[in-house]
Length: 75
Image (cartoon, rainbow, N blue to C red):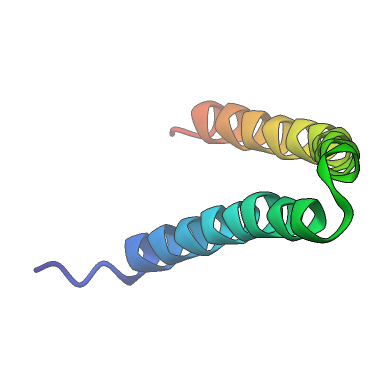
């Protein structure tokens, strides 16, 4: 078993982020469906997806910039 704490932190943060999205989309939309009905659940899903697109684009651009900087600073 390795003691690479940076990898452990990265893996843990990834799992927390995935769990949060699952809870938000599955449990959140499921509760809206159970309480308000199908139409409200579809609207909630569309709103969540609409909010996730700009956030995803920001993270994608930051990841791309990080990749470019790491590749440029190899020496």
